[in-house]
Figure 1: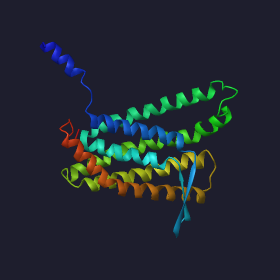
Figure 2: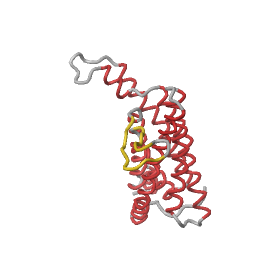
Figure 3: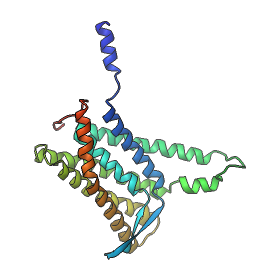
Figure 4: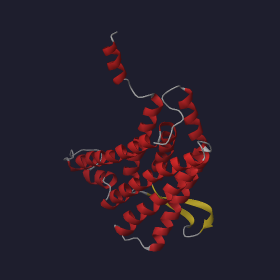
Length: 239
């Protein structure tokens, strides 16, 4: 094969599987959270905590959205701050692709014998203006904050203590995300009172914080496996 042919082949080579898989996981979790945010979940506790009592109320997107921070922390550790910011911003644009496709499906005429009537389809999949505004603003601020804190801690610890930057970056960014989302989506647009809003904030943040603590061993596992494959993943420098 000629040198030109080799160069062309290298220029079109696919992304390493770990990098592609993490990017796919991040975007999938993000768009899933967009269409599951409007359902409020209730979890009973065997004890009572301030502001929420014995029931935790959280938006249905809590699981999918928490997964985005796991994916972004793995991605940031393996591929660097600049790559992580690029992932966050590209995924932000994908939110609008999702919303456009959903709204197009809602606007299209429904078949008379459709198993799901158009009104029910719109009620379930059509996120409200408040949900969209709150989730997009919260996402843009919290995900970029997560990447920033993750790499500041990486520099401060000379690349050690992955557990610390995973937990600290996720815990702080999830708090920012929760406050912005609940305030915009439920207080500004739906008129929730202060007490109800604080209950949602506490409930959502408790669940997210638990997920952040639980996912730390899996961050180590994914990073170790990715580096063990000999892909382009490896120690990164500040960029």
